Amino acid sequence: MIKITMFGAAKEIGRSAILVEDKDTKILLDCGLKIRPKKPTEKPEGLDKYAKELQGVVISHAHFDHSGYIPGIVRAGYEGSIHMTQPTRDICEILFRDHLKIEGARFWNEEDMYNSLYQVANHYYEETFQLADGVSATFYDAGHILGSASVLLDWKGQLIFYTGDINTFETPYHDTNKYPTLEDISILISEATNGLRDLPDREVPNQALVRAIYATHKREGVTIIPTFALGRGQEIEAILAQEFINKPFNIYVDGMILKMNNVYRRYFHEYWVSKKILEWCREHRLEVPFDIPNFIPVNRNLADDLDSFRKMIVSEKKLTVVLSTSGMLEGGPIHSYLHYAAENPNYLIAISGYQVEGTVGREILDGSREITLFSWGNKKGIKIRINAEVRQFSFSGHAQRNELIKMIKAINSEKIVFVHGVEESAHHLKEDLANGAEIFIPDIRKPLVFPD
Ligand SMILES: [Zn+2]
Ligand SMILES: [Zn+2]
Image (tube, rainbow, N blue to C red; front, side, top):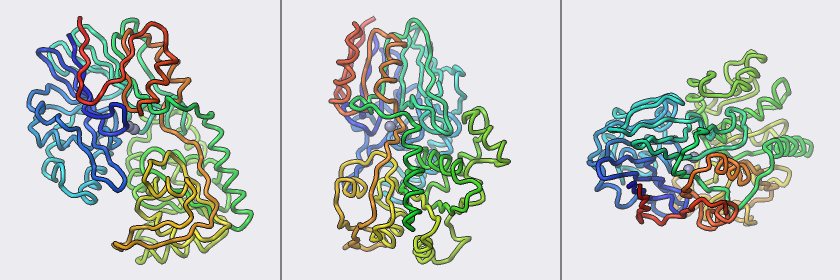
């Protein structure tokens, strides 16, 4: 008998934490927090009491909804290994430090963070490692962000495959996700992020973004791209590098994305990124795509007063693109750029990803043209007017619906559990999969029991 309990990411996205157990063994897959705009962060409630009984913790990738509670489970008493790829470990360290700075020690403190990093065990893709008596795991490249993995568990002879977050698109740094083509996977735990929508082929948003930048430039405008620091940020950097190399555009890169670039640089070899991007760099005699000469990292080497410098950047008007965090416009240097540039109707704000309800990004997309930014320690906020063009480009880091269904059919397991998606999304996928498999859309903390 195997029991699987979700402590988060059940009919929601956020705080992924999946307990897999039988009478002798308990393994945790992912250990995340749920960050919510303008509301308190949520942890995987009820998980702590298992901390001392766990024989292994396996982390699919570094995104905070999969990793943010790792120091928390250590604080609760988990002393064993925390298994992940090496890039995941390095990215986690940056995210943990950043979280402490922003949210303080609400769920865990600095000491818990160091202890948890000390417990990390690194593994490569397709290398099998032992978790407990009769239980082993193997990572598969998930194509989602640097170091991201899906997890195959061999549970005393029974195979369980957990997708984590997967990308079925080829993106500049990563090939499409990989999965085992074994006959006898009995339980598939799959993400269901995009169950409700099909996305256009990746070339479509890539080209649309490039065209929009040229069009904005033609009317003497600056393109401002709010972006996520990790994954999407580097992807857009690569698109811009490939288009604008040897062209007189200045591309300013600002915020947390620069820290993540360092990790991408560290792991920029065949094992972690696609051959295609390596070849492109070799051809252009670059170490990484974001080394092209017209990329300008905005940091204190350029100016002491960064705010004034940012103002200057967006008043240059010609041949300027700004790529800055945060991706949902909730904070970070993007606020400076909006403050100084959003009023100009010739400018473009190019939204590069999904915007969660309640974020500034969502507000703007939904048509608000008077927004209040809470930055610079200003509690009342600063009101700004948006006259710039606002456009969304349909990048997604997740499996698109058709491809996800194709993968699920290829894996052909008898039991499918949908996580990491809203309820309608999972139901929608369920309808498309009426092929005899038993499908589960679990509730939080309600165990699924699979008899032998
Ligand atoms: Zn993710
Ligand atoms: Zn996720």
